[in-house]
Length: 248
Image 1 (cartoon, rainbow, N blue to C red):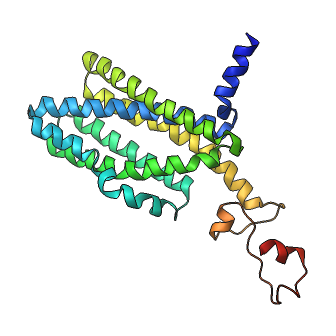
Image 2 (image 1 turned 135 degrees about the horizontal axis):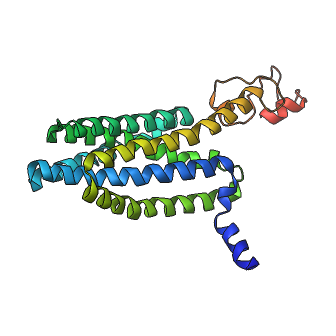
């Protein structure tokens, strides 16, 4: 029994980090809601039009962002604050799901709305995916646990692919598409809440700096937590201070 518990601890060791644990739970719920919404959008498109062509157009619109912007998303993400950008993308995704819920509940949704919202979703998602994948190193305090965090993320993504469509099928059979969209909108509350404690803790540590003083918020070196550059007026042979040697 003890061996089984120890094996479980090793398997899920990345979850011992509070920031990653919060993000893992919140993102898992959000991905389940996203897959439920995708199934409901396809079902709603078919119910409104009965057209295989338009069903394909909506499905293509939901993946067009990754096709056309995936190459450039990583370059753009490297130039922004990842936590704030994640909060923005998750908020936009929640807004998209909320709009879809309202227009579907009111019965004014059309296939044009579905295409536009699917396209909007795909554009935001391409940046959201890159941001999430590049943020694990900041959620996990110990670099040795980073491979485990990536593996757990893969398990979470594939688990959501199974649970989300199954949940959508049950909801569609009992109620309708609007409830699926509402579930997705509410699921983003969990991931947004998981980002806030990390951001507040990170902001406090960032303002305090490594020695308790105020650190500058500018420059990539400060954002990554490394030492700020130190300028030396003399040559390397003449400068014997420890700070200059460290900077060089």
